[in-house]
Image (cartoon, rainbow, N blue to C red):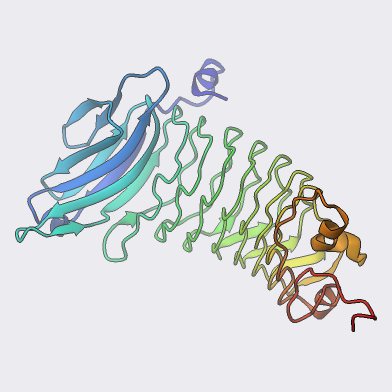
Amino acid sequence: MTAARCQMLGCRPVNEDTVFDFEIAEYEIAGGYCQLQMRATRREGCESFKMDWGDGTVVEQSDYVVWHNYTKAGRYTVRLGKNVKWWRLWECCTVTSDNRILISRPAIHPKCWSDWLESCQGTYCGWNNSDHGGVQGHVIPWGRSIASTFCCYQFCFDITGGFPPWTPAITDATGTFDRCTDLSGRIPRWGRNITEVAQCYCDCPGARGKFLPWPERCTDFASCFKNATGMHGEIPAWPECAEWLDSAFEGCTGATGIIPKWPESVKSVNSCYKGCTGLTSVWTDDPALLMPEEKLRNSPTSDYYRCYDVVTGCADEVRALFWDKNWGGTIPRPTEAAT
């Protein structure tokens, strides 16, 4: 639902601006200023967008790269206007008295996404600093019009709290919380229009709850729950359109039950269930159905690519169904003549 439509239907007030607080320490203005750089694009049909830098400077911008110099340490509330389609924090630096460039990552406190914003792809990606800075506080609810959360908080080690609900507008959730090691709580139901979830909860040990049914149009699941050791329950059935399953559940020791049927469209299953010690069986023991590489032999037009180490580290009864229990790949078991 667009922001305009939601407003017309009387939903909660539309958030016009994207807002975050920007906190500068004294050493980050060692050269007399601290320069914050961002990249941003305008919504279609808009000639410019408003930037309120929080220190009394309010300007109309049209450039792809926007920047501002802060001359005093402190905390500033930055606002990006409703005409912004996408933006990303890019760089922050000062030049010291001996002409050295000092790169810093001042603390960022997200407060609000604009309901007109269409993408937050990589917005806060990699913005972290163990001494001072990084993205702080809880993950805020998504704006109504955001379609891509691709790597939005990737490598943001300092954010805390739980995971906000996915909105119907979101289609690409790739890497959204990849390696957000301090987030914890139950994961929400997938948005119904999501088509990509690769690395979404990768290396998020605090993600909890049962594995939920996949979005029915999703195709890319690679490393979605890799090392998400707090998750548990049975593996949900794959959508028939699923293609990339590499490492989707690798390291998920809480996964239980049987390995479900491969989707008809699958292309790659490398390490899909590697280290899933709680899995007990698979949906079939027929090699022609169980092993994608066997299908490749029988179907010259098939588009399979890789299927190695699928069940390495799983229980003996699972590995025994595959080529070699120590290796766990999906090359067919040898015939008696071959042995």
